[in-house]
Structure formats: C-alpha cells, structure tokens
Image (cartoon, rainbow over all chains, first blue to last red; front, top):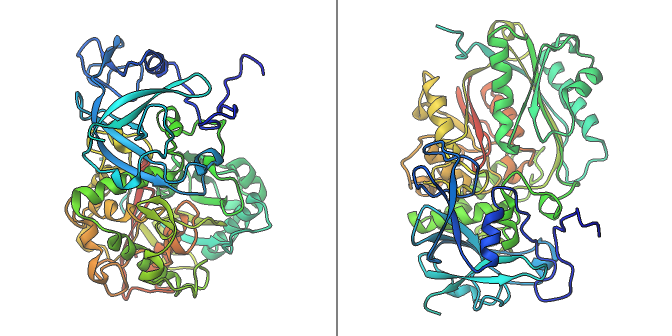
Length: 160
Length: 383
C-alpha cells in the first residue's frame, strides 16, 4: 500500500477489524493524538476560554484564532442512543445489538460526543445489553486502540 | 423599498416521470422528460427558458439540461446544497431571479436514482459532508441513525411515543393509497404492521424511513403576470425562505446548543416574516418526511404548535384529510416517492389547482418544506 494513502478501514482479522477508522482533518488531529495518550481533550479558545466541538480554526464567540486543548474529566451522561440494525456495513452487521450513544460531558454539558457504551475499553461494540442503555446514565471515558493503531474514546457505565 | 417576492411569481407548470424502485432510463433522460412535461403543462416553449435551479447533489446540470431541452440563452442558474434541504430553495432562487428581472422563465428539477443507485453509508472511502471522523467510527453510519438519535432524545424530553410516529407514517400511507402514481398505492399500513416491523435504527423502524425511489420531477416558475396567461391556474409563491441556524451541524444537530430546534425554526421565522399569512391560515401542508420524527419537529418549528407539542399534534387524525392539518397528500417521501422532497412541491401545486388525488376542499394555501436536520428551505404557496 502506498504510504500516502490513509486506509479508511482496517483489514486485519482481529476483533473490530473493518470497523471504520477516524479520518482526522487538520483541526481534529490533536483530539486523536491526545486520545492515543489516554486523554480526553476538547478544543478551547485561548482568547475567551470557550470550549468548542467539533474543532475548527476560529472561535465562534470571539473570533480568536488561538486555541488550546483542555483536558476533560472523562465523565459524562448519556444524552441519547440508537441501536442500528441492518442494512449496515458488514463489520457493524457482525455486531448485532451494538449501540451508538451521544454523551454530554459533565464538565461541559453542551459538548456532546458520539461514542459506544461497552463493558470494558477493549470489549466489542455490542458488549452491553441494550436494555441497560438509559438516557441520563452516568458514564466515564475509556480508551480503545483499534486494530489499525488508532485510539478512540469509548464509554463505560459508572454503575455497571 | 426593494423588490418583494410576495406573490410576484407563480409556479405555472409541473411535470414528473413514473416512480419506481428501478427505472431503466438515465438520470439525464428522466430529468429531460420531467422538464419537458412541466413546460408542456404550462404551455411554454423550451426556447423561452432562461433560468435553471437544482440541488448540488443533482447528477445532471444546467449545461446539459439547457442543451438537451433546447433552451435559449440562460441568464440565471443556481445550485442549492444539503440534499433534501434544497428542494424549496430551488423554486425560491428562481422566484428571486424572476422577481428582480434576471430571468423570465425558470425551471427547477430533481432527477434521482436512489432506488437503484448506491447507498451513501456504503462508501467508506469518502467522508460525508457531516464531520464523519466524529461519528462514523462509532457505527453512526446512516441518516436513519443520526435522526434516530434526535428522535430518542425528543421522545425522552417530551413523552413522544412510537404511536405518534405511526400517526405520521399512517397519514402519508393513507394518502398514497389514494394516489395511483405512488409507490405505496393500494398498500395499506396498519398499526400492527408498524409495531412489528423490523428495526432500522431503534427507535426507528422500517416504516419510519422514506422509500428508495427512481424518478424525476420539475416545475416552471414565471412572473405572476405571465402565469395568468398560461395553461394552468397559477400557484403563487407567496413567501419563501432558507434556514441554516447558528452553530448547526448537518444531520447531527446535537452539537448545537439546542439540538431539538433545528433549521425549521430559522426558515420559519423568515418565511412568516415575508408573508401576509400565519400558520393558522395554512390549509394543507407538505412537510419533508425522510423520517417520521421530522414531522413533529417541523410542526413545532413552523409554528403549528408549541415546543414539545409536535407529537401530541398528530393525535386524533389531525394529519388526515378533514383533520387540523392534512399532511403530505400525495403520500410524501414515506409513501409516494423519495426524490429529495420535490414531489412535495408538485403536490402542493396540485392541491392549489384542485387536482390532488387526495384533495383538501377549497385549499387555498399550502406550506411546503425541505429537509429538516439539514440546512433547509420552505415555500408558502397560495392559489
């Protein structure tokens, strides 16, 4: 494979193979770099301290171009969730009953991240019984390194 | 005082191809058929067309169309973004161009082979216009998943239930059952069918999702004065609006401060500002229905009820013929055809001509909306 091409999927036959990998853009790249270190960080304006998500070059509040990445506690609550069913990409169809959730961060409730609720950082996307999903349930971030070497945040129930 | 859009222009012609899961003709051929039919409906020669408007996701473009149908010199052309959010804006752009003298005969069209074409979520190499890096790795793959997320939150906050979503699906299906052109003609829907249907993205089931359809539609816009000399009764563009709210994120509005007030709210403020009428004056509505939850969200946004009251609004047959607000009287995207909402525009015209297959008696005003959940647009039509 040409080193200049970023694969959109990972093809190794491990658990989680063929799940889509994030394709970072310039603004989003630091999020994934911090995630690889096990840190959940959100872009913040260096001018007015407002957090913003998704990342972008300019602060919508004060138009400053100076930004830094603020570390979050990793705690949050389930804001909403869905249980996708086929037709799906094959890697996701192979995980029946998997969930996708939106988490609102405890430190910044207007910052909401899409993720998955799992029983352990490296557990499959369908490891939590769907009946356990509940809006408002407290969750905390854990970090999972996907087969392609990219680390993504996942979410664990605070009261499993 | 500038030029005003209010009743300055009218839709003088409409045209469409058959709708089917799979049509053999190319998108270009289908587009030509729809445009030629719309011009014939209006009684206007193709050589008079000098304006074109369509969607950015349209596979055919104005250069091809102008040449193919035999248009004359074209002086206005416009493409509107965001998929189904662009439908009403195509007419709005033509109306603005004609009202300000930039053109005299405009054609808006949509040709689509969604029924036999690729599914967007299967394309893993391309990041969709939504910021895919934040959603797709987690298996939030399809528009149904993205809207399902909003729907679950809406149900949680306001006590909306699957029965409310069924009310929406049923109203559209009942109207399609009256419309021989609809994919779901003579295919009734029952509550049991709905409640036992397979899930697509819980809380959304099969019948909460629009169809996948091949087909093309078009309409012709001219000045109000010109329209009065055309073959059909004019349908005036009374007001038109686009809406992209502050801090909006297409399809995944949960990064907005207030995720349950989507683009409908922004478009509605502009629409009513430019109108002599209000929501209480609307006789029939064609509201974009790629997914059933978009209807309660839109009912709130366009002011038919208060915030959080959209689900309850659907109760008691309110969306049926004879109800408080008859909805999607051709069957809509859920049951007539999913052609990025263009069939809602042509159905609005049919209602105001008095020629709908599910005619609302004496309908004189019709709201037509484009996709909610993406930057959107709307039209208020009157006879």
